[in-house]
Image (cartoon, rainbow, N blue to C red; front, top):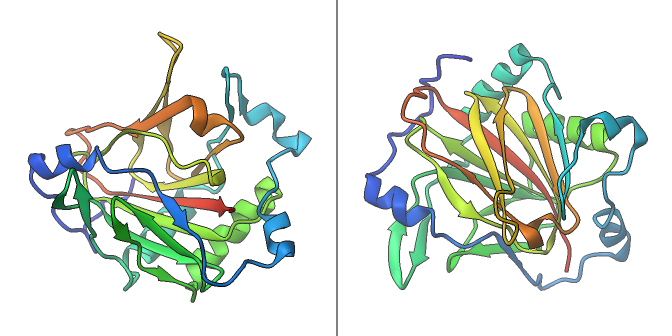
Length: 244
């Protein structure tokens, strides 16, 4: 993994991290301008390419794919460096149980439709519609691999293993969530809501692609736990289909 030092901010206190894990799932707000039907049709597609069957994970009540090598580690590290230099990173203040809490992770967000708005934990996400070249290239690689289109991407920057996200599920509006991981390997855990003992773990590799779709969010929660031994940074890019 690359020794990440550029563009990194120190994580906030453990108290902020604990509060951060309670933040609500990403929820899109109804846009003022209706999204064109053609775009809705594109964004309603699911991953179904038979060539991806070897990457499908057998899990009850879920449709999951894990592709460990969307790109080579060297290219992924270059993506990390270029993404870390984006000027759109910021750290939002969330509403948690009525209190304002500074999130422990830096985020950056983009949408193909300028009319789309996204909100979570009482906070409007700052969206940009002018995709930088590196982000366009990554999205193209993901869409080519999966055979589906995406209209939104959220970037999360985990400065070290002390920065994490607690157990949660995303809104059902997220028809397909495709997560590209670059930088340090981090553990990803999924837990079934009702089936005891149904827990799955992965080490998300540098340059990997993880896909959740269908009813996965209805039945499973997921998290990135704290890992103090991890001293390098990770950036995740969650490409989403936000459909109303």
